[in-house]
Length: 344
Image (cartoon, rainbow, N blue to C red; front, side):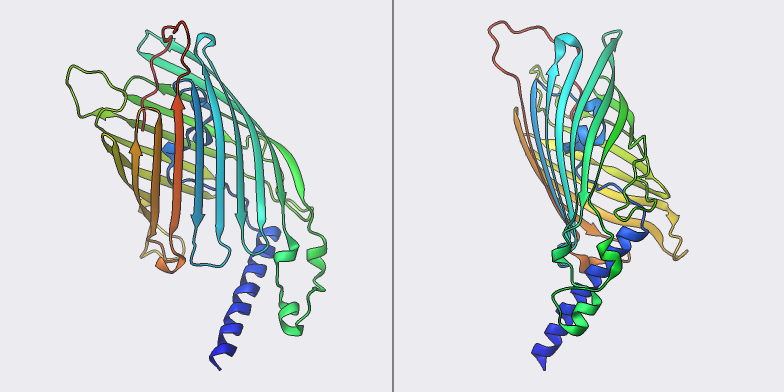
């Protein structure tokens, strides 16, 4: 009997995931994935951050959301950007891959990024950035188990809608602006300005434009005679995002005591009640982050502790980030034309 219940539960989960994927294909609004460590994925946050590293910067981000559920959301991003300081420019490339559910509903995005910056009174820098992307979206139908397959034990389905599902490809365009000094930064980004169609069955399901506003301050905790990039500091920051009818606020701080970094973040809109229950506030997650920060290398791990009604049964989310940021050894080192962007 115990074995029977286990099989029943497994098949119910498979049916739930299959129905969820089809529901996503039919009517839900397409939304972007996100990183809790948005400060460790700068050019994904805003193309205006492109080329604001020392010279060569490699970034890797990986996120597993709701790991307690079978075949949950897995997101990876790999990026490289280059600081061409004497041309006041930055160039970058980024590849992202987002996969969800037993049907491996996936998005692969390849981007080219460019930024241009100009100084104001040698104490303030304005950077503008553009992102040109090409996107592939598709569904692995072999991974799906639908209702008629469960009932009849077949390896195939008679569901007509599944036969209408097609892989799609489209171009995308985004832009942003950033203003920063030695200790302050603030900016905004507009992603998916053209609002491309995301439907896999030929109906209308546009990818809504995402508007994000972000800013912060880096407060040094060391005032000695040495000048170092990785001095002890605290860096409060925020990012507010709105896409379609959905919006979100991430608010918190990073604390750095060389070489250890730690952070605490809140996700949600703390003073707004949810539409479903007026007695509940819009509180999504608490985010705990730990990392190591060196002169040319940094790594971080974060965990999202779910506060919403979805609860701890989801398993929260695990995320890692790795950044290499270094300057090539040149025979004749050029003087920096612009002040460096403060770190988060």
